[in-house]
Length: 313
Ligand code: RIB
Ligand code: CA
Picture 1 (cartoon, rainbow, N blue to C red):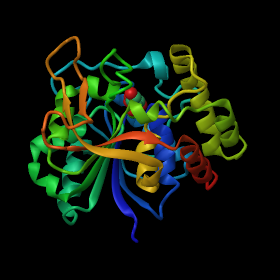
Picture 2 (cartoon, rainbow, N blue to C red):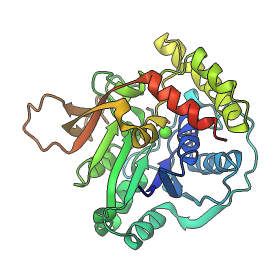
Picture 3 (tube, helix red, strand yellow):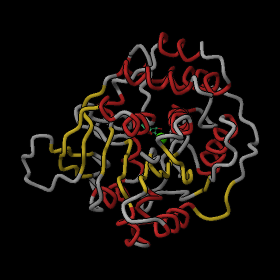
Picture 4 (tube, rainbow, N blue to C red):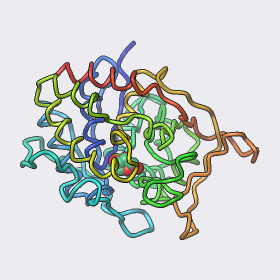
């Protein structure tokens, strides 16, 4: 089976960074057409630099990295330095990466790449606010028939929210973009807090990665150790949720996850519940089942996969 062609759209962020490492470690299954970046966890100038840093650390400065939208479609940008640190990837030393920033805007790259490829052959993997993806769809809807699937980290059902009581960060930052993407008509798999809060980076799991003794594993341990501190206090959990790598793990080993086709709608008006994802798990609304909602995961299997792939570097 040929590798799946993918574009990762991200806002690194320590967990986005680990998702990039997991994708880069899997060339037999995933062919990275490019990495596009968006403002989210930290402003765009940091997210694009961080993505390029990860390519350097993974010794893949050949990967094309693009900068995209620096603010949401309608709302002001909300960031998360209180979780990720001012650099967005606190836990490792920031350096000026060799991997160049491509000149094209990320939205133009997404549009041009999709239109140049056969129909239904490119998988989009957004792990930050959906601003770039939605802007591309609005600018040229013809790209949609070239999309095989959109595998998103975002949303929450039983877990409520993380940035507000009722909204997960990626969807909250740009709810209008999420509304456009969720209703685009292409296959969508949505991995929200209900699964990511199960894949906790416990000390035992982080120690296993630390024992791999390579630069990518060392960077992962450094970033997770910093990322860990906020969530363990907030949730008094034994580790921090490793959100974004769940998208890549789903593509590599979908059997690790349980999913159900549901209607998922986004709140775009209420200030109280802005960004809320209403997941119609029991199909009570009768609205179209527009999303494949992930609701359970084999956490040990996830970390076995992550550790096995990070060992490849
Ligand atoms: O809510 C978690 C999501 O928001 C993750 O993608 C994290 O990187 C932040 O972007
Ligand atoms: Ca992210």
